[in-house]
Amino acid sequence: MTELNTERAGFATRLGAIAATAGSAIGLGNIWRFPYEAGQNGGGAYILVYIVCVALLGIPVILSEFIIGRSTHKNMKGALRQLSPDSHVYRFTYVCIAGAIITLGFYAVVCGWVIEYLYQALTGRLLGHTPEQYNTMFTDLVGSPWRGVLWSALFLAVNFWVMRRGVKGGIERVSRVMMPLLLILLVIFCIRSLMLPGSLAGVRFLLVPDFGQLTWQGAVNAMGQAFMSLTLGISGLVTYSSFFKDDAPLARDATTVAILDTSVAILSGLVIFPAVFSFGMQPEAGPKLIFEVLPAIFQQMTAGVIWAILFFLLVFFASLTSTIALSEIPITFFQEEYHMSRNAATWWCAAAVGFISLLSALSFNVLDKVTLAGMNLFDVFNYAASNVFMLLGGLVTAVYVGWFLDRTIIHDQLTNHGTLTSRIERYTIFCLRYIAPIAVALIFWSVVC
Image (cartoon, rainbow, N blue to C red; front, side, top):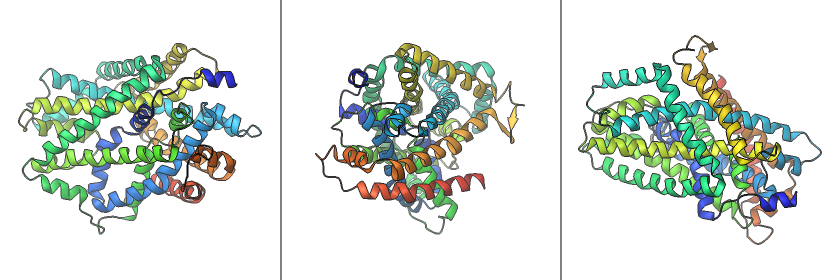
């Protein structure tokens, strides 16, 4: 076992590790869900609750995954087998693998839509339409079997091309380029949006606290957003932290990832809603915001084609950094548990994800009659990944580390075997034991009820 760990791949630099880990958390949810949720639930009041949730729920659960991964330098199954050899908790890994593959499958379809709109922007065909025509454009895209399959397949091809190149040559190299570019583009967009006439209405919508609008459901939504935005519960951060160096300061890195993720979400709101209000559009969330509202805004802006290209490039970067992190979960699992080469593991992962992606893309057209509880297959996969696999995974991970993992291991990982002073150990254990289980139960209750 020691020989295997010695030869195991790892991140070359701490900067690369943080860029990759932050990239795994930053995705479409930061751009199309967080700003709208904030605006509808009291603006700054929602953001304040969200930040508290990140501190009480997000960072401790990040640390629980970091501790499992870095202490063993193995995938989730190998790590749990090493940490608790007399239990069967390692079997839970199969839930994480299924969650990662299902999430990748339906997410790739949305990422394919992003590529189509980037292509339309690059060829000059995206702008110059009415709001009704933008609605028709998106409806036609979703309703077309071949376009949905083609673009999602193209996105997955890019994703798995990166994955075949490994941790250092693929994940780290891409993340070190894309994450800074994503942040630079966000800042540029933010400045441009704030210069628009009437943009302050959008700033007020997003940032001014209105506790009268913050309902109990809004607070629970903030918990769920904090949890899911960081992509917790399906062992992605266990896998990434297994590549960390032994001298990486876990508490500091977890806090950095959480701050970057939150900053991108708030900056996305400052990009989108000042522009939305400036041009008299209605605030929206989800695909309608990205694929209908924003193109209608870009065509009214000076140099709108350039802004449209840059925006969909930004969304593409956010999508790709998220999916390469999700892909690494099953790839590392296949490599280490079934002794596959990196190439073979990547192909097996691509086949499984491609199958889910195909079903998801066709669920809007050819397979639209196939439903479960009134949901098409895309919505079923989305619901299962977000509301079952992630929540269950986060709960099990938090309870395992908080209640069952040897406290010496937790102490050694948070202090790097006594070389660092850590004031977060008791806080982390308390949050994992009590706050995280209650929060996950509340999120699940709000989803089901």
